[in-house]
Amino acid sequence: MRVDTKAVNPAFQSIIQNPGQKVFLDANFFIPPDRSEVTKVRAYSFADFKECWLIPLLSEFAGLVIHESVYDELVADSVKNYADEQKNSNPSKLKVHYDSELNSAEDALRNTYMNRIAVHSQYNPAIDNAKDRGEVRSLSFMAVKQFLFFAANDSLPVRLIKDAAKLKTGLDNMQIVQMYELIYYLYKTDRYDKKALRTLYKYQYYLTPGDKRVNPDWGSFVEQMDALYNGMM
Image (cartoon, rainbow, N blue to C red; front, side):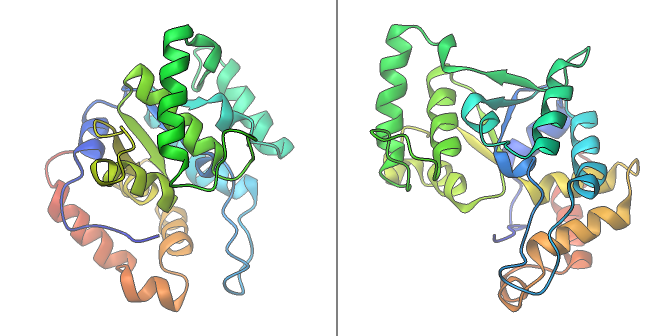
């Protein structure tokens, strides 16, 4: 994933200024990252990922939600149990939206969006395969209900939203928030383990030679983000 620190992201700016807004999350915000296939590193344990990332994230933002297709992707017991705990807590820290909330007209519109989006992915609505299912079905539901913010650490939803006009996905009014932006926000609050957040950034964005060719190191990343968002937090 490429880190973009060239311009202010209006979506990120909006949610840090109003952290109660509804933000849909992709599954990779819950599933511990594993880059062992690209270099000799261990996968994150869920315990470490929960401590450095999930607990801070769900503590800071009150409007976090997922679509049922993302919820279905949380198959590991530790991940699913944690999501259920957050969903069932009082007050709830995580809401799940279901396609059953759509009326018949909305369901037909959802299918239109889904077909437009799916052609740019590996998801086939006719067979409802697993690949890219969570992203495509989440974005289709959001488009019908006119929800604005999707948060991900995956190139597909970034492209579908940022290139909406060119791709004719119908997602022109939607905005994307990326994991590195939220890592930066959590770091700047001074309420969480800064070393652990720095390590998470490096693991996700500055681990391989390819990462290092296109992304800033941690110190440069923080400096560049400070220049963009100075005074906003």
